[in-house]
Length: 165
Image 1: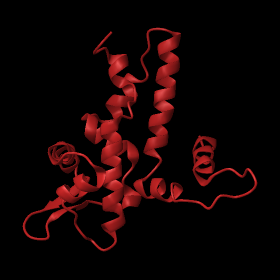
Image 2 (image 1 turned 30 degrees about the vertical axis):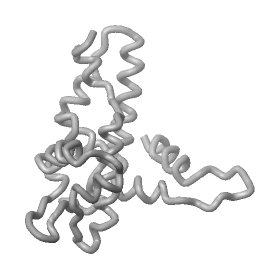
Image 3 (image 1 turned 135 degrees about the vertical axis):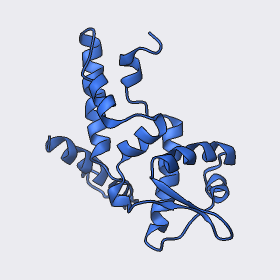
Image 4 (image 1 turned 90 degrees about the horizontal axis):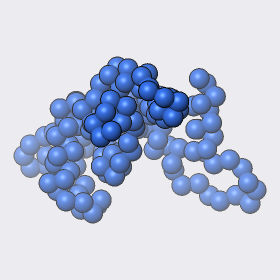
């Protein structure tokens, strides 16, 4: 089934996506001051190759998620505030997909198993659509451990996202 519409439509949160989101988080921390960061510095911090990050950032730049500045002190910065960039938009930029195309392919299924996976992928995609870079950063801030078994901020955030649908 390699290359089928159903397989191609499934959401894949890959290492490539994780490295890209991590780099975007780094840029988000610098956004308020409109500072740029070189790809070589981001590659050093993440422990990945510069050529790998260049490929990822070419896609981000083409999808207007980041802006590059040349010359001394140049580098990259977010093209919009972190509260305006959804995690789904980052995923779509990396995969070269459009939202409408992805959701349309998730609406087709050949059998019950595919239907279940498509429904799960659609829900996950909607969650990523409704989660901005800013929200993702704030829900993942380190929390002091409590002695009781309260729900973490991230768990509460996830529950709130699915409760609103």
